[in-house]
Length: 190
Ligand SMILES: Nc1nc2c(ncn2[C@@H]2O[C@H](COP(=O)(O)OP(=O)(O)O)[C@@H](O)[C@H]2O)c(=O)[nH]1
Ligand SMILES: Nc1ncnc2c1ncn2[C@@H]1O[C@H](COP(=O)(O)OP(=O)(O)O)[C@@H](O)[C@H]1O
Image 1 (cartoon, rainbow, N blue to C red):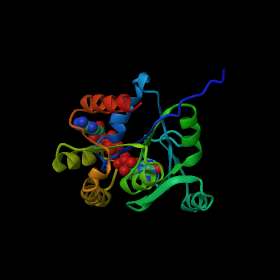
Image 2: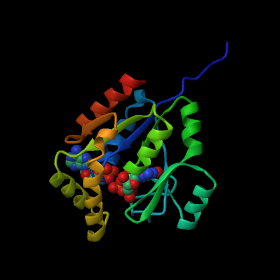
Image 3: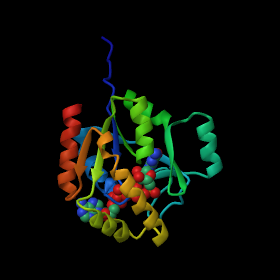
Image 4: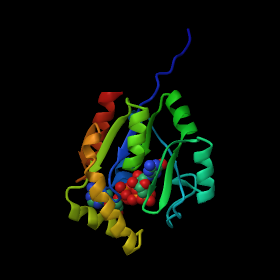
């Protein structure tokens, strides 16, 4: 008998900068029953002190990024507050074929591109309990200069306005509650 592996789910996790996508994702990945794999994005942003190339992102020059676009190697890409971000296609396809549920943690413009190409994708938008709390979180992280924080907050209101394009909207008030909510959604759709 031939072993046919059921293709995994493509999961898009979006939400404004600082809402807690990375934090909630780390909790989700502790739950092995969810069978998750993370799609490592490519970016022209400079690495933060705690970030590692090939783990958090593939950090590349603008020239290299444009070459990847040219070669049609990206599933989607977008510019976000002065930098390029994109999803390498090859690993996503390979992981889905292996039956993994693949998580793309991406911003709204890229998410809309994936929704158009993959209508079956499970799309989740994380919202903060309030805009004031979002501001507290993004500033509290201390990873961006003040002008970049302002640009990201300005972008955040526009991004939150698109939340109804997503199949699910989840509030990240408490990290573990948000993790549980998303885990339930993934299980219902697996
Ligand atoms: N379109 C797209 N957006 C991405 C990708 N990777 C990350 N992003 C998004 O780009 C935005 C900025 O990311 P980053 O500079 O790491 O800031 P952070 O998400 O606030 O830690 C966030 O909304 C990310 O989810 C990608 O491959 N494609
Ligand atoms: N539910 C929460 N309550 C309080 N602080 C949170 C919560 N979720 C995340 N944070 C904090 O907010 C900041 C931004 O979270 P992060 O995961 O980096 O966001 P994102 O990946 O969406 O940019 C971090 O300092 C993180 O510890």
